Image 1: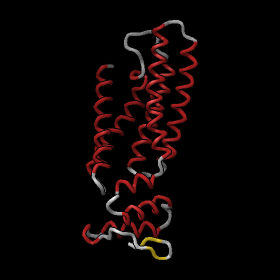
Image 2: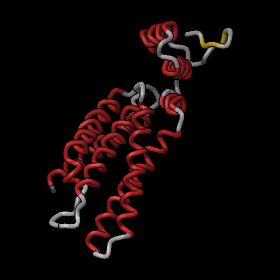
Image 3: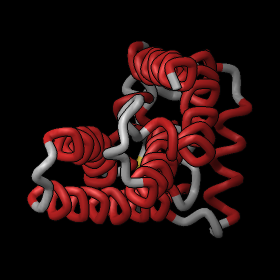
Image 4: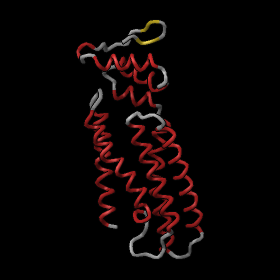
Length: 206
């Protein structure tokens, strides 16, 4: 259990480093995306496969195996949703929403069970589950509430044309014209890219 907790902390740190690298400098940062993937994807897999052991009190009979398993699944979906949201993958919002629903259910179940406990050991177990779930739920809710275009505009704050083209494509990924406009713009040499969006008939011209 200690080794799993250590691996969990290492993966969280790697993912957080990736988030910092992604948004610290304006423009696309490949290093940040790599750290986010290396940190958060294995972390989601760890929660899914080992949630039963990560969300339990060591050497205690107060553990609720069902609650621990549900919490592991909820955290797995939450982390995966955060990862896909930060990388602008499609259906990231759906993954985040499912994670938030499970996390909310875990919190409500744990609160009810905690109130019914007379043993301090079981009370502390459910209190720990509620605390960790609320932290993850808060991060998930913030990312779910923040529009994807806001994240894109902040990351590409030095290149509003790129930000606009990427936001338009992600808003309607089935539109071939938007995909081609984005691909053509990204193939240009960075020095040739316009830093100011030019509007023509309400659209950005790359």
